[in-house]
Image (cartoon, rainbow, N blue to C red; front, side, top):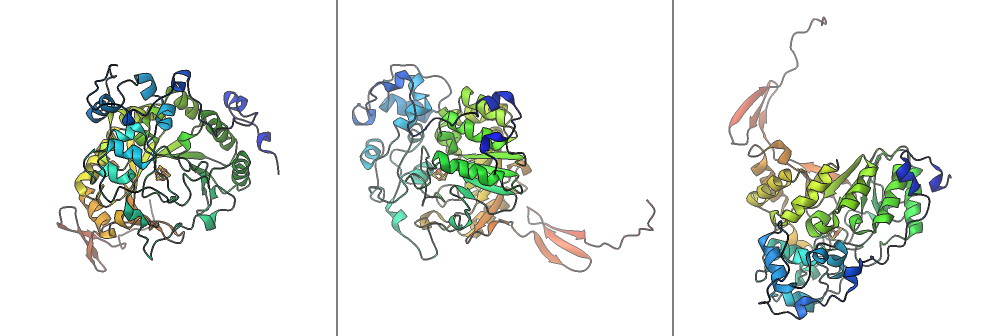
Length: 436
Ligand code: SF4
């Protein structure tokens, strides 16, 4: 087996960066300004304090008000620094209470493996007094997470059983999932990998990353790798660059995809430096994770624009969630935003039966109703494929409303999006004498 770095590199500037191991990213480095003690303003400041530093244009009114209220002393430079955002994320019940009026169901200390973490930016988008607020429901823990149903499990997709080496899930012949970190800046309460993210179980050492790379390199059938986690864009830039560079050296690997929620929860992470680094590894695609139109802020628009301008095709994977985005109206608003952000709505996922996710799951009929409410009423590009990821590891199964009303040997009767009936002559006995 050849060592990892023996393969010749295509681009010199990339190759130069690959000669050594990446730095250890266990500690996210901070710029000098960020090293000043940042006292959590939520525990200190009066809500009447006004913002002393003018805000840059391009924030939503909610974020402007939030900063005026809680972070008036924090300059734009720090607020817009992704490392500052991560350092100052809200991680405890006491901190949550400083920002939100918690309901009884929300007043719990999290002691399950999926931790609490919300970036200050994302916190700025949550409704203070409304526990039903869609974004708030998606990230604030509730007691309902502790209701486990018999049909649920920690790993319903059997990813662990389809993992030949740590970090790799190899389910489909020509694609592999490479989970390279267990860390996310903000944890979604419905996360499919809630068994593994945020608790160190999946935080791959350099050695494990190398084993994952070796596996892909030694499996020529793999032509597409999805770099996921956790959220790979929370990784140290040099480590991510090292990883992508090593993947790009694998001759049979045609495309690399990155799965991330960063543009929605930490858009400050999309910096010119990051984008410059990413575009070295084309063809590189990105699967973003947008859940609700309220996430489509000026900051998220800017982040997606930077990625799209770098030639990275963007798709969004959205989980269908009860009380969050389970209506035609909300989904239409979301997919319209996504198209304007140059993000193609890619998949709409039926929520996986993860332990403690019953309060998020809708019946499948709801998903079909939403697809029916989109098809014909908006651009085809706005339509995601609705899928169930089959429990047991069976892969994605697409679901479509049934547009066939009846059929016989000569025709099929369809019902269109307005419930009008049309006949198509379904015959293959047309005249053909063999001369073309
Ligand atoms: S960003 Fe993805 S991996 Fe992280 S908690 Fe949300 S769903 Fe899970």
